[in-house]
Amino acid sequence: MLFDFAQTYIQESLDRAAFENGTLFKFSNKYTARRYVGEQDPKTTLSITQQLSSLCKAALGSVLDYPVMKGEGLENKSTLILYPQNSDTPCAFNVAFFWDLHGTPCIHYGLFIVHPDHQGKGIQSVMGFTNLLLLLKRQSGKTVWFTDLGRSPSGSRHFCSFMSHVYPRPGLDDDDGVIEKKYSSQLAVARAFHSRFKSHAGMSPNSELCGMAVRGSNGKGGAEALVRVNGTTRSRNARFNQWMESICPQPEDEVIMVGQFLVTSFLSRELRRRVWAIATFAALITVIFYLYFVSSARNVREELSW
Image (cartoon, rainbow, N blue to C red; front, side, top):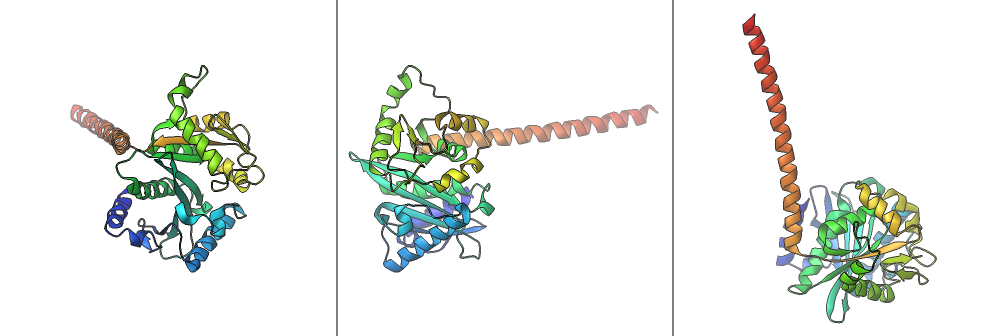
């Protein structure tokens, strides 16, 4: 799927306008997509809200109370909608948005909704990567902060796999305040994000920021419907499940994660991961062949001894 994204990225570089006004494009062998950036004309805006609302109802049973669901606040949004091949019924979407903190560009990972029939296929990971990189092109050559809000262990693992200098994340215990000082920039980004974008990010107006955890984020006036589905978004990595349970003990709680995307770090991690996978596969094949030939040689010796 990442190879298909590479094609999309190159095409978008050649014709950015076509990838920002809802033109249908190939996302992978199984999916097509439309992407809308910024405000659209009234007819297109209505189409966007109808598609997002219908998918929310199918996935969550109700429509989330976000401004984008009403066609509001689209000026800084990038909406990526995914469809099964040869279908115009949306199966997933990601609404990311860009903002500014004292001249430093920031991009919010945004809201992901995936239809239950299409979950567990790596869609969220590639959709987020696609939307963020296309937004990142607008800030070429600058340091960019990325934010993510949620209580999904799986989503948190995806964020950590793409980003560098992520705070908070599993393994960063801070009993004496040393870690908090080291990541003071991430804390400043989280405070600004919480104070300025509660409604746009689906946080309750009564929520409170405690460190990087948002207490009562999914409470009254927030994304209450997400509380019902959070139990189904566990990660295959038990460490992230345990970490999320410790940092967000109540179902209404969420955590703000802040990091930076560094191409070199991402490619290095991907290379190490793939080299390890290839090496493991090669070792397995070697063992199989070794056992096969040893067994065959033993049988031949036994037959000759007779």
